[in-house]
Image 1 (cartoon, rainbow, N blue to C red):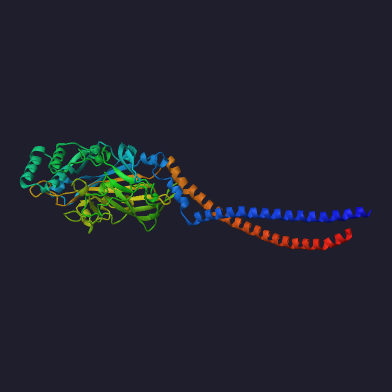
Image 2: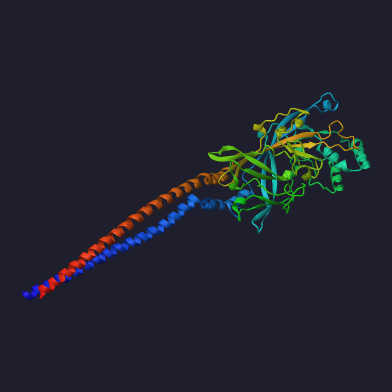
Length: 529
């Protein structure tokens, strides 16, 4: 009996030690689990904190979206750029000269103009001869086709128009630098032989737009060759050069090196500078090609620049207002700057002087042809421009030039381009031609409206998702990362507190266990003995 009691007491003693060891192991296991949980939560917290910083304080997310918009071969953006699904409508409003005989015989003191049209054509554009360059640019040419749109037009292509004789006016202007005998011979030939000495001509609408061929134009072409200024066309026509197949090339940035520079024009026909003007600043090739604009520059106080090849210059646009472009997609509307056609005191003035306020002399880049551009109906022009005429009615709502731009992407949503073509009379000293008209008189010819105000569904879907879906995802990620960071931070804090509390409790219990075991050991030994 005594032996069994002794064995039992020893068993109790070792069982107590075993129980204490199990308790210690369990506490240690719980501490290890908490440490692992804290480590995992810490990693997630750091990732979430980084995501919060990226979404709230950087443009990295947006930049990554924008990077998908660069011109890369095979991308949707590239194919939309190469063969634009948007087919602009070109409408031509013609100034018909209705009292030429009365004016030239001094019966009327002013020239009467009647705006006729519009004559509208749907334009299909396609880039050709595309070359990707090593410096992050792309070089291309383009082809354009035009189809008459009767439903948008007010008139037919067979309408007879009375318009300025551009060939004669250009020929006389080009003859100013010829010697006396050359001028006299040319004048006699035009008056007596060719019989094309009238300042106005009658021509069919379609021929006037896409080119009419006559003997006078051949004379002018030969004269241009003699003056070593060959013409880039064989026919005079408002859209003749636009519709012609030429070897002209344009080089723009693809955005691969700097996405904010996508669509910026860098070269024309392989040259990075023009030679039309007297100053490097005016000869500078820069500005958007019209498809993209630098998105970081798009704000209410910005001035954006479009490179206008027909004017051999970049033209400024200023912010006007925010507009609902299409189905809730908002655009920032930029209008052509009010002073865009004011060259006074600038390097755009030609040798003979600066053009009147409101017109821009493009003759230096039009083979010397005295073409001038302006707002339609001489909107914002000097009153002297309109004074010789009846029938001009400038209206900002009808005659402004504007571009609507998607702010996030810098992508052009739509545009309504409006400009007027004019020709200036320059009399030659020894030629009696054009004597009925004052020297330096600027004659309105036509004004054109090129509009692309609505996108086809496929292209609009890309813009719609870039506007709304991307923004919603961005907002979701911004707040999602922030909330996750707060929750993870709180969980780390709570778990750390529990771990500290458990460690303190474990230390106290361990001390109590040690004390109890130390107190129990002599008793057990005494009992055993």
